[in-house]
Length: 312
Image 1 (cartoon, rainbow, N blue to C red):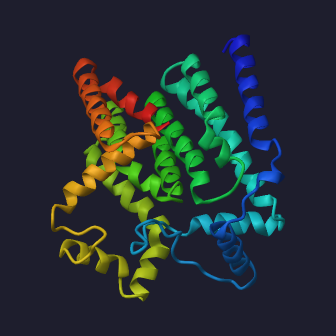
Image 2 (image 1 turned 60 degrees about the horizontal axis):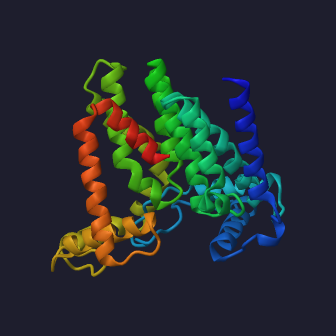
């Protein structure tokens, strides 16, 4: 890497530090979720409280997340029992992501792509606020980036060990529902790399499913125990959905179509905050046409790199 690129990376890092630590103490937020994390950490440390399930999501009837977020908080709080220790630690993870996303972009594309990606990440408003406070979603980008970095290394170096690390850290990112939503595309990426680099002799799909079962059990054993001890509430909720008895996500009255339309609207609203429903449909149609055009114009290798970039 040239001296100019190194200086640009250092400058980006200093900008990231300034944005995350300027008037840091004055802007800290202690809401109900943060308070709950402190309380559970205190119980884990001083009362040997064994937590079996993770944070609840919008689908509070489902135990989607393992409990390791609260154990991360407990470890940090154990070694530094200060109200500043948790947000500061999260901030350092956020800063480390600026450098890690540069490495990921450099490996996938080139130095210029890495520099642009790290700069955009360093100044993105949402990511900056992620680095000024602590909450379940705030560590998700760090572990997703680490996972994609190892996935890129597995592709470049043709090393199955990096693939295992990638899957492990992706499961570690299951701190909030956003990681779960990204999981299907991540699985396709893993299968594609195994097949492309011929990392294993057996069927790539079967091997990927085997790894998912192994690492999934490692992280979700506490959740499985909770479900077993409490009569499988998540399974019962899924049955209610399938039988059309759940208002939130039923199978009757065109609920699937209505849900699809609602998510199209939310997706386009995440790109442009001020959009009405009609503009959302137009924007989503343009996005879908663009994706189909890329799929047709470029080969599969390039398209999967686009998916990686979309992840970042």
